[in-house]
Length: 125
Image 1: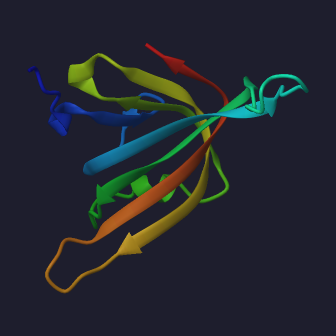
Image 2: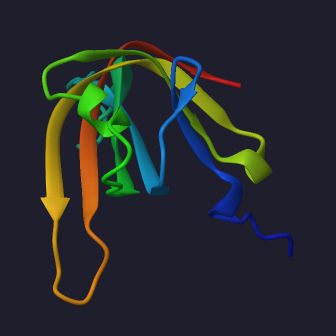
């Protein structure tokens, strides 16, 4: 079995790499429209409708890097690119930063997480 390693994954905003990324998550969804009709034996039926995508990026905080300050909540990130490297999947689109949170632990490295909501089409290459 060939496993895919995340260590070579990257996150970019436009052509700039986001520093110190430790993980990213991408979720794709589709709304469903119910098409159930009488006489179908009691089982609901559906068709897909509008699609959306969202996710998060987690990074180590670096006091010498102000790049994370370029991702304030409510802003549109043009050209967000999530690349899983070894799997050959690259996801690109525009997104709105919906939240940012920092995690500080006494015996841990400070992290910052960004949540985003895609706006428009997600391109998968």
